[in-house]
Amino acid sequence: MDKLLIRGGKPLNGTIAISGAKNAALPEMCATLLTSEPVRLYNVPRLRDVATMRRLLENMGVQIQTHGERGGMSFQSMEPVNSEAPYELVKTMRASVLALGPLLARTGRARVSLPGGCAIGARPVEQHIKGLQAMGAEIRVEHGYIEASLPAGRTRLKGASITTDMITVTGTENFLMAATLAEGTTVLENAAQEPEIPDLAEMLIKMGAKISGHGTSRIVIEGVEKLHGCEHAVVADRIECGTFLCAVAATGGDVLLEHGRPEHLDVVIDKLCEAGVDIVREGDGIRVRAAGPAWQHLKAQSFRTTEYPGFPTDMQAQFMALNAVSQGSSLVTETIFENRFMHVSELSRLGANITIDGKNAMVEGVERLSGATVMATDLRASAGLVIAGLVAEGETTVDRIYHLDRGYDQMEVKLRTLGADIERVAG
Ligand code: EPU
Image (cartoon, rainbow, N blue to C red; front, side, top):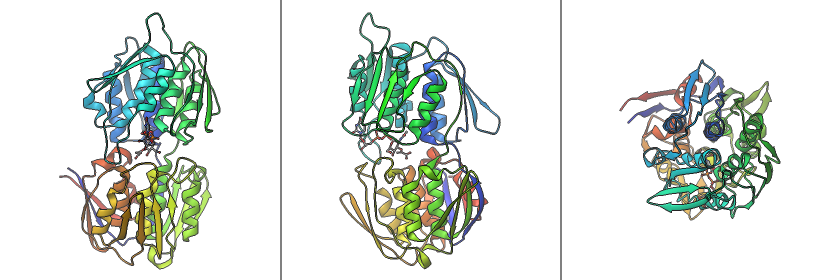
Protein backbone atom coordinates (compact mmCIF):
# COMPACT_ATOMS: atom_id res chain seq x y z
CA MET A 1 0.00 0.00 0.00
CA ASP A 2 1.39 3.41 -0.99
CA LYS A 3 2.19 6.01 1.65
CA LEU A 4 2.90 9.70 1.60
CA LEU A 5 6.05 10.96 3.26
CA ILE A 6 5.81 14.64 4.20
CA ARG A 7 8.51 16.84 5.71
CA GLY A 8 6.49 19.72 7.12
CA GLY A 9 7.20 23.39 7.55
CA LYS A 10 7.37 24.63 3.96
CA PRO A 11 5.09 27.45 2.75
CA LEU A 12 3.11 26.83 -0.45
CA ASN A 13 3.64 29.17 -3.42
CA GLY A 14 2.78 29.08 -7.12
CA THR A 15 -0.08 28.09 -9.41
CA ILE A 16 -2.01 24.85 -9.84
CA ALA A 17 -5.15 23.92 -11.76
CA ILE A 18 -8.20 22.56 -9.96
CA SER A 19 -9.49 19.36 -11.59
CA GLY A 20 -13.04 18.34 -12.51
CA ALA A 21 -15.28 17.38 -9.58
CA LYS A 22 -15.38 13.72 -8.60
CA ASN A 23 -18.96 14.06 -7.37
CA ALA A 24 -20.08 15.55 -10.69
CA ALA A 25 -18.04 13.22 -12.93
CA LEU A 26 -19.47 10.05 -11.33
CA PRO A 27 -23.20 10.82 -11.94
CA GLU A 28 -22.38 12.29 -15.35
CA MET A 29 -20.62 9.07 -16.36
CA CYS A 30 -23.79 7.19 -15.29
CA ALA A 31 -25.96 9.60 -17.30
CA THR A 32 -24.31 8.31 -20.48
CA LEU A 33 -26.41 5.14 -19.95
CA LEU A 34 -29.51 7.18 -20.86
CA THR A 35 -28.76 7.28 -24.60
CA SER A 36 -27.36 5.00 -27.30
CA GLU A 37 -25.68 8.01 -28.93
CA PRO A 38 -22.07 8.97 -28.16
CA VAL A 39 -21.48 11.32 -25.23
CA ARG A 40 -18.20 13.11 -24.63
CA LEU A 41 -17.13 14.45 -21.25
CA TYR A 42 -14.18 16.80 -20.70
CA ASN A 43 -12.31 17.67 -17.53
CA VAL A 44 -12.83 14.20 -16.05
CA PRO A 45 -10.41 13.93 -13.10
CA ARG A 46 -7.84 11.11 -12.89
CA LEU A 47 -9.11 9.26 -9.84
CA ARG A 48 -9.53 5.74 -8.58
CA ASP A 49 -13.34 6.25 -8.28
CA VAL A 50 -13.49 7.32 -11.93
CA ALA A 51 -11.56 4.16 -12.89
CA THR A 52 -14.00 2.08 -10.81
CA MET A 53 -17.00 3.76 -12.44
CA ARG A 54 -15.43 3.09 -15.84
CA ARG A 55 -15.12 -0.63 -15.01
CA LEU A 56 -18.72 -0.68 -13.76
CA LEU A 57 -20.05 0.92 -16.96
CA GLU A 58 -17.86 -1.25 -19.22
CA ASN A 59 -19.30 -4.25 -17.42
CA MET A 60 -22.74 -2.98 -18.52
CA GLY A 61 -21.56 -2.87 -22.13
CA VAL A 62 -20.71 0.83 -22.40
CA GLN A 63 -17.78 1.51 -24.76
CA ILE A 64 -15.41 4.03 -23.20
CA GLN A 65 -12.32 5.76 -24.53
CA THR A 66 -10.06 8.46 -23.14
CA HIS A 67 -8.89 11.39 -25.27
CA GLY A 68 -5.91 13.70 -24.93
CA GLU A 69 -4.73 15.71 -22.02
CA ARG A 70 -7.89 17.60 -21.03
CA GLY A 71 -9.56 14.72 -19.25
CA GLY A 72 -11.60 13.84 -22.33
CA MET A 73 -13.63 10.63 -22.16
CA SER A 74 -16.16 9.34 -24.68
CA PHE A 75 -18.97 6.90 -23.95
CA GLN A 76 -21.35 4.92 -26.09
CA SER A 77 -23.99 2.78 -24.51
CA MET A 78 -25.35 0.65 -27.37
CA GLU A 79 -28.03 -2.00 -26.89
CA PRO A 80 -28.16 -4.39 -25.19
CA VAL A 81 -27.25 -2.87 -21.85
CA ASN A 82 -26.36 -5.31 -19.08
CA SER A 83 -28.39 -3.90 -16.17
CA GLU A 84 -26.31 -5.30 -13.35
CA ALA A 85 -23.93 -3.58 -10.92
CA PRO A 86 -22.16 -6.45 -9.11
CA TYR A 87 -21.11 -6.41 -5.45
CA GLU A 88 -17.39 -6.72 -6.33
CA LEU A 89 -17.46 -3.24 -7.88
CA VAL A 90 -20.14 -1.57 -5.74
CA LYS A 91 -18.39 -2.51 -2.47
CA THR A 92 -15.38 -0.38 -3.43
CA MET A 93 -17.45 2.68 -4.35
CA ARG A 94 -20.86 3.63 -2.97
CA ALA A 95 -21.50 6.01 -5.87
CA SER A 96 -22.23 2.87 -7.97
CA VAL A 97 -25.82 3.28 -6.72
CA LEU A 98 -26.01 6.14 -9.25
CA ALA A 99 -26.44 3.53 -11.98
CA LEU A 100 -29.84 2.55 -10.55
CA GLY A 101 -31.93 5.45 -11.92
CA PRO A 102 -30.45 5.56 -15.45
CA LEU A 103 -30.55 1.76 -15.86
CA LEU A 104 -34.22 1.62 -14.88
CA ALA A 105 -35.09 4.52 -17.16
CA ARG A 106 -33.21 3.12 -20.16
CA THR A 107 -33.82 -0.64 -19.89
CA GLY A 108 -36.78 -1.00 -17.52
CA ARG A 109 -34.73 -3.06 -15.10
CA ALA A 110 -31.75 -2.82 -12.81
CA ARG A 111 -29.94 -5.16 -10.47
CA VAL A 112 -27.61 -3.14 -8.27
CA SER A 113 -25.79 -4.46 -5.23
CA LEU A 114 -26.60 -2.72 -1.94
CA PRO A 115 -23.61 -0.58 -1.09
CA GLY A 116 -23.42 -1.52 2.62
CA GLY A 117 -21.95 0.71 5.33
CA CYS A 118 -18.78 2.71 5.05
CA ALA A 119 -16.21 4.33 7.32
CA ILE A 120 -18.14 7.60 7.76
CA GLY A 121 -21.58 6.17 8.56
CA ALA A 122 -24.28 3.62 7.73
CA ARG A 123 -25.39 5.52 4.62
CA PRO A 124 -28.59 3.63 3.74
CA VAL A 125 -30.28 4.11 0.33
CA GLU A 126 -33.95 3.62 1.26
CA GLN A 127 -34.82 7.10 -0.07
CA HIS A 128 -33.52 6.16 -3.53
CA ILE A 129 -35.73 3.07 -3.44
CA LYS A 130 -38.85 4.90 -2.20
CA GLY A 131 -38.52 7.61 -4.84
CA LEU A 132 -38.12 5.16 -7.70
CA GLN A 133 -41.08 3.15 -6.36
CA ALA A 134 -43.15 6.36 -6.50
CA MET A 135 -42.19 6.52 -10.18
CA GLY A 136 -43.75 3.10 -10.70
CA ALA A 137 -40.75 0.82 -10.30
CA GLU A 138 -41.26 -2.51 -8.56
CA ILE A 139 -38.34 -2.96 -6.21
CA ARG A 140 -37.32 -5.84 -3.97
CA VAL A 141 -34.19 -6.04 -1.91
CA GLU A 142 -32.99 -9.64 -1.95
CA HIS A 143 -29.69 -11.42 -1.42
CA GLY A 144 -27.94 -8.07 -0.99
CA TYR A 145 -29.21 -6.69 -4.30
CA ILE A 146 -31.72 -4.01 -5.24
CA GLU A 147 -33.83 -5.74 -7.90
CA ALA A 148 -35.86 -3.16 -9.80
CA SER A 149 -38.15 -3.55 -12.78
CA LEU A 150 -41.22 -2.03 -14.41
CA PRO A 151 -44.65 -3.65 -13.99
CA ALA A 152 -45.76 -5.91 -16.86
CA GLY A 153 -47.00 -3.88 -19.81
CA ARG A 154 -45.09 -0.71 -18.92
CA THR A 155 -42.01 0.42 -20.83
CA ARG A 156 -41.35 3.71 -19.05
CA LEU A 157 -41.26 5.02 -15.51
CA LYS A 158 -43.98 7.53 -14.74
CA GLY A 159 -43.66 11.08 -13.45
CA ALA A 160 -44.26 11.51 -9.71
CA SER A 161 -44.02 13.99 -6.90
CA ILE A 162 -41.12 12.97 -4.65
CA THR A 163 -40.33 14.50 -1.27
CA THR A 164 -37.45 12.79 0.47
CA ASP A 165 -37.28 12.54 4.28
CA MET A 166 -33.83 14.15 4.23
CA ILE A 167 -31.79 15.93 1.62
CA THR A 168 -29.79 13.38 -0.35
CA VAL A 169 -27.27 14.26 -3.04
CA THR A 170 -27.02 10.97 -4.95
CA GLY A 171 -30.74 10.34 -4.31
CA THR A 172 -31.61 13.62 -6.06
CA GLU A 173 -29.25 12.67 -8.91
CA ASN A 174 -30.83 9.23 -9.31
CA PHE A 175 -34.35 10.75 -9.51
CA LEU A 176 -33.19 13.47 -11.89
CA MET A 177 -31.69 10.96 -14.32
CA ALA A 178 -34.61 8.52 -14.04
CA ALA A 179 -37.21 11.27 -14.55
CA THR A 180 -35.69 12.52 -17.83
CA LEU A 181 -37.10 9.48 -19.68
CA ALA A 182 -40.28 9.01 -17.61
CA GLU A 183 -43.79 9.50 -18.90
CA GLY A 184 -45.12 12.80 -17.53
CA THR A 185 -43.77 15.33 -15.06
CA THR A 186 -41.70 14.64 -11.95
CA VAL A 187 -41.40 17.17 -9.15
CA LEU A 188 -38.54 16.76 -6.67
CA GLU A 189 -39.14 18.58 -3.39
CA ASN A 190 -36.43 18.87 -0.75
CA ALA A 191 -33.91 18.34 -3.56
CA ALA A 192 -30.19 18.72 -2.89
CA GLN A 193 -28.66 21.93 -4.23
CA GLU A 194 -24.96 21.03 -4.31
CA PRO A 195 -23.32 22.54 -7.45
CA GLU A 196 -22.79 19.02 -8.85
CA ILE A 197 -26.56 18.75 -9.29
CA PRO A 198 -27.07 21.77 -11.55
CA ASP A 199 -23.98 20.60 -13.46
CA LEU A 200 -25.59 17.19 -14.05
CA ALA A 201 -28.88 18.90 -14.97
CA GLU A 202 -27.07 21.10 -17.53
CA MET A 203 -25.57 18.01 -19.11
CA LEU A 204 -28.97 16.27 -19.24
CA ILE A 205 -30.49 19.40 -20.83
CA LYS A 206 -27.78 19.25 -23.53
CA MET A 207 -28.95 15.64 -24.10
CA GLY A 208 -32.51 16.88 -24.68
CA ALA A 209 -33.97 16.63 -21.16
CA LYS A 210 -36.52 19.18 -19.95
CA ILE A 211 -35.50 20.34 -16.49
CA SER A 212 -36.12 23.50 -14.49
CA GLY A 213 -35.39 24.57 -10.92
CA HIS A 214 -32.03 22.75 -10.68
CA GLY A 215 -29.88 24.47 -8.07
CA THR A 216 -32.99 25.04 -5.91
CA SER A 217 -34.81 22.68 -3.56
CA ARG A 218 -37.63 22.12 -6.10
CA ILE A 219 -36.69 20.56 -9.43
CA VAL A 220 -39.26 19.91 -12.16
CA ILE A 221 -38.54 17.37 -14.89
CA GLU A 222 -40.82 16.85 -17.86
CA GLY A 223 -40.06 13.40 -19.24
CA VAL A 224 -39.12 12.95 -22.91
CA GLU A 225 -39.11 9.78 -25.03
CA LYS A 226 -35.48 9.85 -26.04
CA LEU A 227 -32.22 11.58 -25.16
CA HIS A 228 -29.33 12.17 -27.55
CA GLY A 229 -25.55 12.53 -27.33
CA CYS A 230 -23.79 15.68 -26.08
CA GLU A 231 -20.47 17.19 -25.03
CA HIS A 232 -20.04 18.46 -21.51
CA ALA A 233 -17.18 19.70 -19.33
CA VAL A 234 -17.28 18.56 -15.69
CA VAL A 235 -17.53 21.50 -13.22
CA ALA A 236 -14.40 22.29 -11.16
CA ASP A 237 -14.05 20.39 -7.89
CA ARG A 238 -15.06 22.73 -5.04
CA ILE A 239 -13.81 20.29 -2.42
CA GLU A 240 -10.37 19.93 -4.01
CA CYS A 241 -10.26 23.72 -4.22
CA GLY A 242 -11.33 24.13 -0.58
CA THR A 243 -8.73 21.57 0.48
CA PHE A 244 -5.92 23.59 -1.14
CA LEU A 245 -7.31 26.80 0.41
CA CYS A 246 -7.02 25.21 3.86
CA ALA A 247 -3.55 23.85 3.07
CA VAL A 248 -2.24 27.31 2.12
CA ALA A 249 -3.97 28.85 5.14
CA ALA A 250 -2.23 26.31 7.38
CA THR A 251 1.30 26.59 5.96
CA GLY A 252 1.29 30.20 4.75
CA GLY A 253 2.10 31.20 1.17
CA ASP A 254 0.61 32.66 -1.99
CA VAL A 255 -1.19 30.36 -4.44
CA LEU A 256 -3.38 30.79 -7.51
CA LEU A 257 -5.95 28.00 -7.88
CA GLU A 258 -6.88 28.10 -11.56
CA HIS A 259 -10.50 27.24 -12.42
CA GLY A 260 -11.50 27.41 -8.73
CA ARG A 261 -15.09 28.65 -8.37
CA PRO A 262 -15.40 30.91 -5.28
CA GLU A 263 -19.21 31.06 -5.64
CA HIS A 264 -19.32 27.32 -4.83
CA LEU A 265 -17.37 27.79 -1.60
CA ASP A 266 -19.02 30.85 -0.05
CA VAL A 267 -19.23 29.59 3.52
CA VAL A 268 -15.75 28.06 3.57
CA ILE A 269 -14.20 31.21 2.09
CA ASP A 270 -16.11 33.44 4.56
CA LYS A 271 -14.74 31.36 7.45
CA LEU A 272 -11.19 31.49 6.08
CA CYS A 273 -11.43 35.27 5.65
CA GLU A 274 -12.75 35.64 9.21
CA ALA A 275 -9.78 33.56 10.36
CA GLY A 276 -7.45 36.08 8.71
CA VAL A 277 -6.68 34.55 5.29
CA ASP A 278 -6.65 36.80 2.23
CA ILE A 279 -8.75 35.29 -0.61
CA VAL A 280 -9.68 37.04 -3.87
CA ARG A 281 -11.12 36.03 -7.21
CA GLU A 282 -8.44 36.27 -9.91
CA GLY A 283 -9.02 35.49 -13.60
CA ASP A 284 -11.00 32.26 -13.73
CA GLY A 285 -9.67 31.17 -10.36
CA ILE A 286 -8.95 32.03 -6.74
CA ARG A 287 -5.84 33.57 -5.18
CA VAL A 288 -5.14 32.71 -1.56
CA ARG A 289 -2.49 34.41 0.57
CA ALA A 290 -1.53 33.75 4.16
CA ALA A 291 1.32 35.63 5.81
CA GLY A 292 2.90 32.66 7.62
CA PRO A 293 2.04 29.46 9.47
CA ALA A 294 -1.52 29.57 10.86
CA TRP A 295 -0.47 29.69 14.52
CA GLN A 296 1.20 33.08 13.98
CA HIS A 297 -1.82 34.94 12.63
CA LEU A 298 -5.04 32.90 12.17
CA LYS A 299 -7.96 32.69 14.55
CA ALA A 300 -9.73 29.30 14.76
CA GLN A 301 -13.34 29.26 13.48
CA SER A 302 -16.31 27.28 14.76
CA PHE A 303 -18.61 25.72 12.16
CA ARG A 304 -21.41 23.24 11.68
CA THR A 305 -21.73 21.06 8.59
CA THR A 306 -25.02 21.22 6.71
CA GLU A 307 -26.29 20.62 3.20
CA TYR A 308 -25.36 23.10 0.46
CA PRO A 309 -25.19 26.08 0.62
CA GLY A 310 -24.07 25.39 4.22
CA PHE A 311 -20.61 24.27 5.33
CA PRO A 312 -19.80 21.04 3.41
CA THR A 313 -19.21 17.86 5.39
CA ASP A 314 -16.58 17.05 2.76
CA MET A 315 -14.51 20.02 4.07
CA GLN A 316 -14.88 19.25 7.78
CA ALA A 317 -11.65 17.27 8.30
CA GLN A 318 -9.48 19.70 6.34
CA PHE A 319 -10.83 22.77 8.18
CA MET A 320 -10.49 20.96 11.49
CA ALA A 321 -6.80 20.33 10.73
CA LEU A 322 -6.44 24.07 10.12
CA ASN A 323 -8.26 24.91 13.37
CA ALA A 324 -5.93 22.54 15.21
CA VAL A 325 -2.97 24.80 14.38
CA SER A 326 -4.78 28.18 14.64
CA GLN A 327 -5.06 30.40 17.70
CA GLY A 328 -7.89 29.82 20.16
CA SER A 329 -10.62 27.22 20.54
CA SER A 330 -13.31 26.22 18.07
CA LEU A 331 -16.35 23.98 18.04
CA VAL A 332 -16.85 21.74 15.01
CA THR A 333 -20.28 20.09 14.66
CA GLU A 334 -20.88 17.32 12.12
CA THR A 335 -24.59 16.93 11.29
CA ILE A 336 -24.54 14.93 8.02
CA PHE A 337 -22.70 11.70 8.86
CA GLU A 338 -22.68 9.96 12.24
CA ASN A 339 -19.08 8.75 12.18
CA ARG A 340 -17.03 11.41 10.46
CA PHE A 341 -14.49 12.19 13.16
CA MET A 342 -12.12 9.30 12.45
CA HIS A 343 -9.31 11.74 11.67
CA VAL A 344 -9.43 13.14 15.23
CA SER A 345 -7.46 10.33 16.87
CA GLU A 346 -4.88 10.50 14.08
CA LEU A 347 -4.57 14.30 14.37
CA SER A 348 -4.10 13.78 18.11
CA ARG A 349 -1.14 11.49 17.37
CA LEU A 350 0.48 14.52 15.73
CA GLY A 351 -0.12 16.59 18.87
CA ALA A 352 -3.50 18.21 18.13
CA ASN A 353 -5.73 18.93 21.12
CA ILE A 354 -9.24 17.78 20.18
CA THR A 355 -12.01 16.21 22.28
CA ILE A 356 -15.12 14.61 20.83
CA ASP A 357 -18.55 14.67 22.41
CA GLY A 358 -21.13 13.07 20.12
CA LYS A 359 -21.56 15.28 17.06
CA ASN A 360 -19.21 17.92 18.48
CA ALA A 361 -15.46 18.25 18.44
CA MET A 362 -13.76 20.87 20.64
CA VAL A 363 -10.50 21.96 19.11
CA GLU A 364 -7.88 23.85 21.16
CA GLY A 365 -5.30 25.32 18.82
CA VAL A 366 -1.68 24.31 19.44
CA GLU A 367 1.49 26.08 18.38
CA ARG A 368 3.11 23.07 16.80
CA LEU A 369 2.40 19.54 15.63
CA SER A 370 5.13 16.94 15.52
CA GLY A 371 5.46 14.48 12.66
CA ALA A 372 4.46 10.84 13.18
CA THR A 373 2.96 7.94 11.23
CA VAL A 374 -0.79 8.30 10.82
CA MET A 375 -3.39 6.21 9.05
CA ALA A 376 -5.89 7.52 6.52
CA THR A 377 -9.40 6.21 7.24
CA ASP A 378 -11.49 7.81 4.50
CA LEU A 379 -11.04 10.21 1.65
CA ARG A 380 -11.51 13.59 3.31
CA ALA A 381 -9.94 12.44 6.59
CA SER A 382 -6.81 11.66 4.56
CA ALA A 383 -6.78 15.19 3.16
CA GLY A 384 -7.00 16.59 6.71
CA LEU A 385 -4.00 14.46 7.71
CA VAL A 386 -1.99 15.67 4.72
CA ILE A 387 -2.67 19.30 5.74
CA ALA A 388 -1.54 18.52 9.29
CA GLY A 389 1.58 16.81 7.91
CA LEU A 390 2.44 19.90 5.85
CA VAL A 391 2.54 21.94 9.07
CA ALA A 392 4.03 19.39 11.48
CA GLU A 393 7.68 19.54 12.46
CA GLY A 394 9.75 16.65 11.11
CA GLU A 395 8.45 13.72 9.08
CA THR A 396 4.85 12.61 8.81
CA THR A 397 3.93 9.38 7.06
CA VAL A 398 0.33 9.11 5.92
CA ASP A 399 -0.45 5.42 5.48
CA ARG A 400 -3.25 3.86 3.38
CA ILE A 401 -3.46 6.70 0.89
CA TYR A 402 -5.57 4.63 -1.48
CA HIS A 403 -8.40 6.57 0.18
CA LEU A 404 -6.85 9.83 -1.03
CA ASP A 405 -6.37 8.43 -4.55
CA ARG A 406 -10.11 7.72 -4.73
CA GLY A 407 -10.93 11.41 -4.84
CA TYR A 408 -7.89 13.68 -5.35
CA ASP A 409 -6.25 14.08 -8.75
CA GLN A 410 -2.49 13.76 -8.13
CA MET A 411 -2.59 15.63 -4.85
CA GLU A 412 1.07 15.10 -3.97
CA VAL A 413 2.20 16.20 -7.45
CA LYS A 414 0.22 19.45 -7.11
CA LEU A 415 1.57 20.04 -3.60
CA ARG A 416 5.14 19.43 -4.80
CA THR A 417 4.59 22.00 -7.58
CA LEU A 418 3.75 24.47 -4.81
CA GLY A 419 6.98 23.72 -2.92
CA ALA A 420 5.86 21.09 -0.42
CA ASP A 421 8.35 18.41 0.54
CA ILE A 422 6.13 15.40 -0.12
CA GLU A 423 6.71 12.10 -1.84
CA ARG A 424 4.81 8.92 -2.55
CA VAL A 425 6.47 5.80 -1.25
CA ALA A 426 5.32 2.59 -2.88
CA GLY A 427 4.49 -0.03 -0.30
N1 EPU B 1 -29.37 9.10 3.84
C1 EPU B 1 -30.27 8.16 4.32
N2 EPU B 1 -31.00 7.45 3.41
C2 EPU B 1 -30.87 7.62 2.06
C3 EPU B 1 -29.95 8.57 1.57
C4 EPU B 1 -29.21 9.30 2.50
O1 EPU B 1 -30.41 7.98 5.53
O2 EPU B 1 -31.57 6.91 1.30
C5 EPU B 1 -28.58 9.89 4.80
C6 EPU B 1 -27.09 9.53 4.76
O3 EPU B 1 -26.80 8.38 5.50
C7 EPU B 1 -26.46 10.79 5.28
C8 EPU B 1 -27.38 11.90 4.74
O4 EPU B 1 -28.63 11.25 4.44
O5 EPU B 1 -26.49 10.79 6.68
C9 EPU B 1 -26.90 12.60 3.50
O6 EPU B 1 -26.43 11.65 2.56
P1 EPU B 1 -26.41 11.87 0.99
O7 EPU B 1 -27.32 10.87 0.37
O8 EPU B 1 -26.62 13.30 0.64
O9 EPU B 1 -24.90 11.47 0.65
P2 EPU B 1 -24.45 10.73 -0.66
O10 EPU B 1 -25.28 11.15 -1.79
O11 EPU B 1 -24.28 9.28 -0.39
C10 EPU B 1 -22.76 12.57 -1.48
C11 EPU B 1 -21.30 12.66 -1.80
C12 EPU B 1 -20.50 12.58 -0.51
C13 EPU B 1 -20.93 13.75 0.38
C14 EPU B 1 -22.44 13.69 0.63
C15 EPU B 1 -22.97 14.87 1.43
C16 EPU B 1 -21.19 11.69 -4.03
C17 EPU B 1 -20.77 10.56 -4.89
N3 EPU B 1 -20.96 11.55 -2.71
O12 EPU B 1 -22.97 11.33 -0.83
O13 EPU B 1 -19.14 12.72 -0.86
O14 EPU B 1 -20.26 13.67 1.62
O15 EPU B 1 -23.13 13.67 -0.64
O16 EPU B 1 -22.65 16.06 0.80
O17 EPU B 1 -21.71 12.69 -4.50
C18 EPU B 1 -16.81 12.47 -0.61
O18 EPU B 1 -16.68 12.95 -1.75
O19 EPU B 1 -15.85 12.29 0.17
C19 EPU B 1 -18.15 12.09 -0.14
C20 EPU B 1 -18.34 11.26 0.87
